[in-house]
Length: 316
Image (cartoon, rainbow, N blue to C red; front, side, top):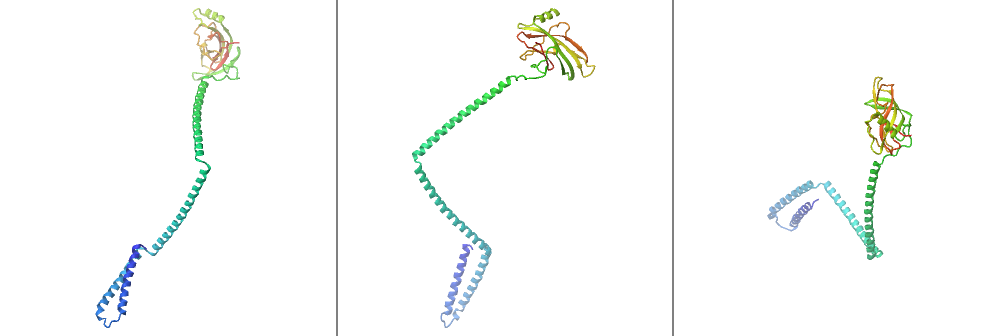
């Protein structure tokens, strides 16, 4: 029920009480003749009836404003809020107790650690933190150095040739070339077609004798530059299988590469070789044997010959 509704009810009750009291006094008081007051009595009765009707109207308005259920709900809310307020007051008292405990602990801590001790501890902490920062800087620098070293190592590894294989089939690599006189079967691709040949380096001649034979083959052949010498290899080439039985294959010394011991591919020597020369045209089943000339360094004691990935010795 709202405060304004309560005030209205109080005012109505007061007015009714005054009227009834006045009327009772008037009726009780002895009067020999009340005819002169008849009109006033009727007026009072009319006012009482009017006030009674007004009180009923106010009561109906009040019931329309606040029902019994609404009033009960409001009362319940008030009780709940009052309960919460009581609980909060208890928590405030608990918090006050906690503040007192914290203050007591703080006082005890101040007794345990003096201001000077605390300052000393703080200085030690700052010093250790400074050392940590310095060490972190050194670690960062060392990590940068390690990264640079790893990058350098990677670059060096890229420049360093792989180690040669420790074993392999004869003719499979320049580290395991076929021996002089040994035939090696070779399957190779030429202009998109597959061929099979059997190749043998039967002998080699090197140095002055090789130059003498080359010069005798053609006096206009050029000598090799200083520090180099000619080497002649007699090669047997057997054309075993081609794409078809009618596929012709042309061979020459240009199809072979002379390679130094350390892997340098020598330039092809444009000279006229002694007879029989290796140059020939073959069909499957045919073979040819002839000389091929190459210039190599005099200091190269272990040159090899390569044809389509098959390797042969040019040394004993």
